[in-house]
Length: 261
Image 1 (cartoon, rainbow, N blue to C red):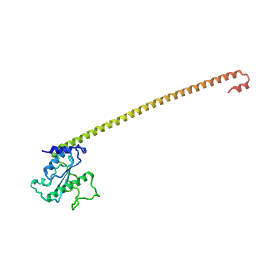
Image 2: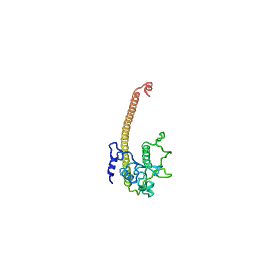
Image 3: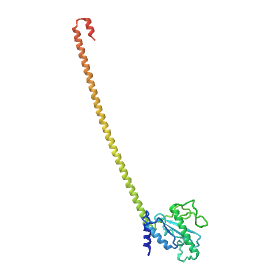
Image 4: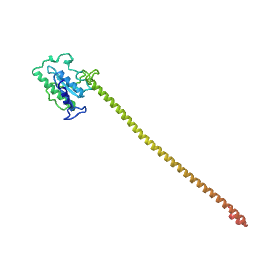
């Protein structure tokens, strides 16, 4: 398609900044008024994984919609087309002329710009609306009626399937990397605990050796003390025998009684 590559390069241009998905814009706003042009934006944003916002106004300019499309997370524009296209009506048969056509374009741009600010910075309860809508429009998603979650891309969508498969592979790789990191962390902790156990084992061995040496020293002291006691007993017995012998040599009975124990 002529001009498609130029459009892709304009989204990849990072002269003014860069984003996590590798493009140079945070959010693409689409206010075009035909289905083919929106499909071009949808295809480009799907290939670049670029979040974009599409707005439209009804043919009578009294109602409209704001559609946020996140590739890989929400349904793409081809899976959630406008009611006119879903109903099988040829968009080229619709005629928008005069003030209604101009008002539709302006209203589409105004509402898209306002909701892009809500998406980027969040809704502000204190700010007042500067548009002239006669009623307050609540924020709705695309799941219709009572849904609280955005419309998920169907598995058969050929436009978002490569992106979804890439995201799934990325999730699997992240999971594998997380398991590797967890295993490495457990191995590191086990190594630390093993080193600590070795230190405790070595300290216990040294304490046991010290206890054995102290016990041996105490036994030596006890053996030496027992030898001293036995030596004292022998000296006492020797002194007693010598005293008895000396007493036998004394003829005086009174003196013998003095030396006998």
